[in-house]
Length: 156
Image (cartoon, rainbow, N blue to C red; front, side, top):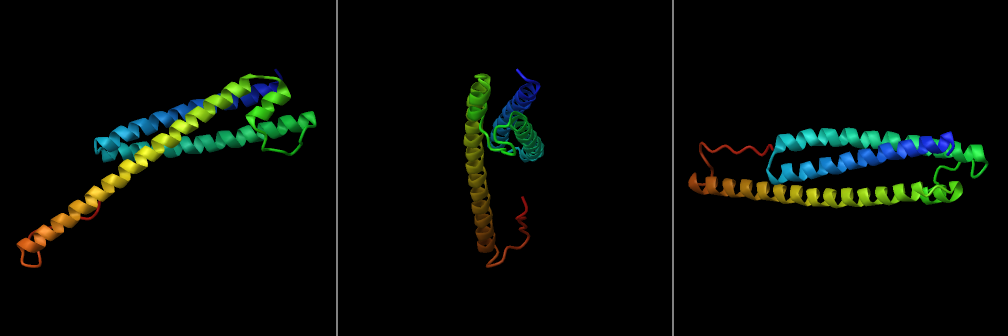
């Protein structure tokens, strides 16, 4: 294995670790949403932002290394859109195929959990909206059109 391939694999392994971390954060977020733990959701949002930023930086590094690898070997110099499948074919290293499968699996899990969490958030917002509407109507009915002494904040 060349030094360039080793660097590419190291970046891919770090990406895989970070995708696993993001998946774990989304699982914790799901539980916080179910438990109505808004402070937990807020903290996890910060951690997710950090994780996504790290993944973007790793992806830029991976693309740079792949471009460097292909440039040094005279195959597609300047090209940065080589897939892991193509990299495996060119290098003869099947490890890239396994990494590709793992990345695809992790990304599917992240997408599913993200969608599930989005649905939980939408339902929670709908519940809060309905509750505020109900309280406003109940207060108006009790106060003859305008509730006296009833204050409802719309801030969440």
